[in-house]
Length: 514
Image 1 (cartoon, one colour):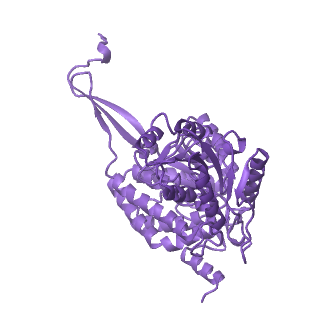
Image 2 (image 1 turned 90 degrees about the vertical axis):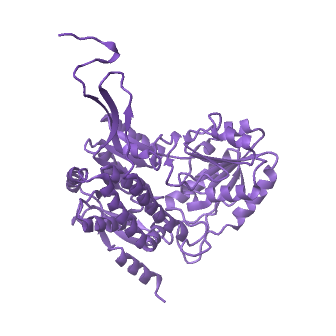
Image 3 (image 1 turned 90 degrees about the horizontal axis):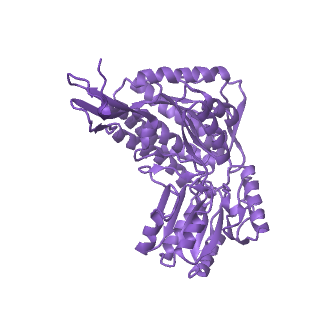
């Protein structure tokens, strides 16, 4: 049997990864490997996986210019033919799913199932984009003037920028890049410096398809710090749209830079998501939905369940069952079957986990389960025991997103109380209610209920499908990407009026005689 190191070497060889990889691609890989190195460490055991050379200022300008040039060629290809290219990309990702999924596991610490699930999400959005390529519709509108036609159409933007986070190191890029591609745009990707290898490997896969198809290299990659490269992208007028996924604090900086040049942005920022558990809920479904939402990806999803608001009629029973789940949950090596919670991304994340628990206890919270570091035999990684904390909604720490497996438990008396607690935080991404009562579910999804961009009934806050538009309100940024009509973000709208008569009637009955 091959050793773990040997298996890793074989995996990296299949994905064309090297000891030091170029982190800059614009139709070709930059050979400037003497730039500052971004080291990718596995959160599983703290080992160095490989290094990536960051993008130089010279390469930055070459890359953006390449994206502009590729756009001029790509936009001339009819949308359905763009869709046929995406079909081939989806197939290439299917062929590489096992390897790419394992790389996500190694670099981001996700379980095997979640690692492969992220690549499947890329495949799904590729398939979605194929269908979309034949459905980029416009409108024909009624004109008040005789012999006039009024229409709306959508026109591609040009190069767009995608700044993604470590927790979904591949799929969030595809939400933007694949949809933008069939719209006629090119894209420039800056991945998280914590997970650069996944981006390099994915670029290897998709660029090979574009080369085989004889079409422009529409996907470009640059690596570096958010302060340097990310800020440069946000300020660059050549990049027509910036899609940013990250913290509220960083998102505000990006938004300011983009708005200063009156550019377009899609902001997918923090989430502080809550689930309401009614006394009319199916207890088993509620327990599973809340547990998955809180524990999946070790609480490092923007849609992770961070608060659960439980009816006082079932509170004691529900909390006892949840305590049992937390005391028995399998924390460990995400490469092993049966592991539900892998490591946090790095030591900084562990310290933030510990600091939040300490703060919650200072504010009067009661630790019910977990809340400490977890020692995993043979692994020097970043493992913690997920924390379950009985809390009050007015505690400041409960209004803050901690990117770690901490679940705060509150009690409510009436549904109106539950909604008030639910909506009392600055963030507004995902929400859920568990109930079999039709009136309760309708209340929660109405304007009186959840103030989030995503609302679920009898399913958890995490695990959104690609077919719906993804995004949230308030401090979450208001962005929408992925499915539904989110494609319109990657295009500009034109209103067109055509006069096919022999006179020039004016709108609103205005007369102008010469």
